Image (cartoon, rainbow, N blue to C red):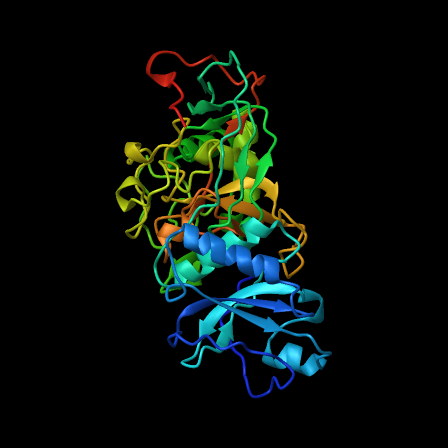
Length: 423
C-alpha cells in the first residue's frame, strides 16, 4: 500500500503573523504557485532565493508562471504561531516550501513537506520549482544529470532460470543517478549510487509461474491464510473477503496465465524466490535497471507517453505487452502494470527530509501500477512507494533478480540474449 508523508495543503492566516514580514508581489495573480522561503534571520535564504530565480530564468519561465516570496522570521516567534498558523515545527526552520498566493501577493497556503535548506542548493531549488510546475500541469524540469562513465565488462547479457523459466537481463556495473528533484520529497537528494552488477527479471513474475511454484511446494500465501486481500476501489483500499493471488479482486475471476501475480506479501515473494534459487532486487538494483545511468524519468526516456506502459484499465496486462516501453537494459513493464516489491527497508536517502519515523517492517515498492491516479508522476523510475512487509493487495507483484555469480541455470542464448540498448 502506498504511504507518503505529504499532507494536504493547509491555510495560513496572515492576520495572526504580526511579527512576520511579507514582501508583496505587485503583479501576482491569485492562486499562482510560488516558492516561499522561510528563515529565522532576514537574509539566511537569500542565496537560495536568487538561485531559484536564476534557474527559473534558465527554464524560460518568469514570475507570472512561478512566483517567489520570502517570509523572514527575524524576531522570536511564539510556538503557537509556528504550530497552529504556519503548521510548522521549530526544528523545521530554516526551511523552504511551496505555496500559493492571494490577490495581494501574500502566501495563503503552504505545503507541509519541505526540503531542508541544508541539502545542496541546486537540489532544493529544482525541487521547489518542480513543486510549483506540477500544480499548473507543467514540467518536470530535470536536475542536470550527467551519466558517469561505465566500466568495461565481459558479463553475459542474459540468463535463464531452469526452475521457473524466468529470463534475467544484465544490469551492468557502473555508478548511476538514484533519486530525483522531480517528484516527492523522499526522492531527495539525487545522488550517484555505487553499483557493481546483477541480473534482473525481464518481466514480472506471472500468475502461471506462481501457480507452478504453489503446485510444487503446497505453499499458502498470507492472503489465503488471513482470508482477505486489499483491493483498490473508488480511490481507497477496501478489505475484500476471499481475495488472494488466484482471484486478486475477490469473486471467482482468475487472472490470465501471462498476467503478473498479485496479492502477494513480501514473505510470499521471498518464498517463491527461494524455491527458484533467485531473490528480490534491492531498491537500488531496481532503479538502475529501470532508468540506466543518465537519470531517465521513465524507462524509455524523459518524455511521458501513456502508450508505452499499462497505466489504465481494471486489471494488469499480460507481461511484455508494451515492448516500446522497455528500459535501457531491456526490462519490460518497469512503469505501470503492477507495483513491485524490493528487498530494501524503506528509509530516506537523507535524514533531513522525512518528517516521520519509518517502521523497520516497511519496504520500498517500485514501478507504479495500472490504477494510479496520476501515472505521469507515479510510474517515474525514481518514484518510491512503501508498504509493510506483511501486507498484500491487487496492485502489487514482483520480479526476480540474482547475483552475477549465481548458479541458477544456463547462460541465455539466441533470442534470450538481449543486447543492452544505449542509454
